[in-house]
Image 1 (spheres, each protein chain N blue to C red):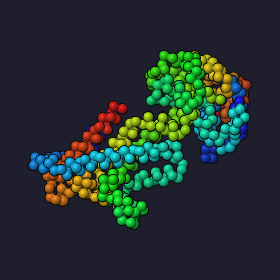
Image 2 (cartoon, helix red, strand yellow):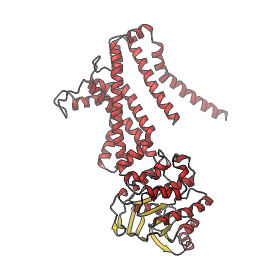
Image 3 (cartoon, chains in turn brown, orange):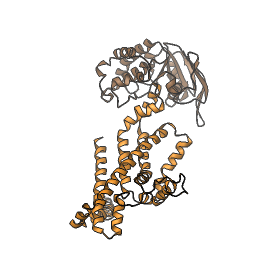
Image 4 (cartoon, chains in turn cyan, green):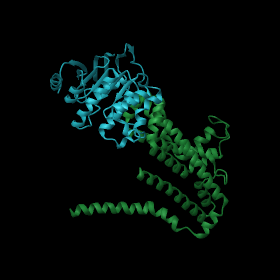
Length: 223
Length: 259
């Protein structure tokens, strides 16, 4: 389980996160919505260890990981743009964490099959379509067998039709690993398809909500 | 509209004429003053070929050393920009460009020279080919470092973030992910450092001396020939230098075009 307690982050005098608390259970896909610039990406980067918080603690299965470097956290991270390693092939991208003795080849092979990536393994990443780049990015993060996975608007570059098709696939793969998932988006359709539970990040605070409509109302008020 | 066009063309003409007169003409004047006797005398002078050999070897080693240190600087630039060591090294990077190169040469002489008042003292480095390499390195390294730093500014930071979450330490990310994507910048850095080393005179003469056959390089060979009144040999050696430097610059621009 992922547990976040009293997380605070300032950029200069601006409060980005103000005593944020959150719990995500194994296999739960928690969607976090929010307006542009609300601090969603910063929040994920803090959990991943890429940015240090000013206050607060982060626990994975009751182990405090707040002070750990990103490479020691075992958290998967899928950024907004796929950020594939351009000098490596699709296969080398997906199997990358195995170099650091993370994950297993068996799992990697399984994920390649589930995400229909077999025909592309030996190809360079620049010839892939946006949808396939996103699949590779997800597979690469999951192969490391992370204890938590964070996805930062991973499909925002894609057309709606491709996005809807991919979301089902993503959900199936994410559920397969049985780990806590945080999925950040500002697209209500995307949120509805993939999410189990929903939250909104407004004025530095996370609010639990019951429906996408509620998220909309809260965000409209914040404008 | 006609007035606007006239102004535009007039400005272009001024630029073109200034460029021709101040840059192209001096270089061209060396070519038109080449004479057969000068070429024959220079090419049969063993010290010319030894200075050419010294120049190439010293400039290559200086560029290589510059590249290695610039790679180290790039690592600090990417991961440790908030540290005092980085800030200090960044400040010092520009110093060799800003100070007169005679001063740079003297600084090296005092630090690593034969006299005992230097920082390290009696090293015996001065007036050796090693001193030539160090002098060239001193003035060319900042160009290599700047070339790598500007390429690092353009790299997608997300790939670094992702690699960290996949278990890479900063050092591993740098060597496995960052450097393989900086091939062009690494090439530019070494070529820039090499061509800068090739053209260095003041620092080399101050620290390495101008000993024919030992520490003399092409730039100091030209100087010596002018001093000896052998202008035709100095011109031949200068044209040789220009062709060499121009070939390097062309190589760099061709490679950039391919990329």
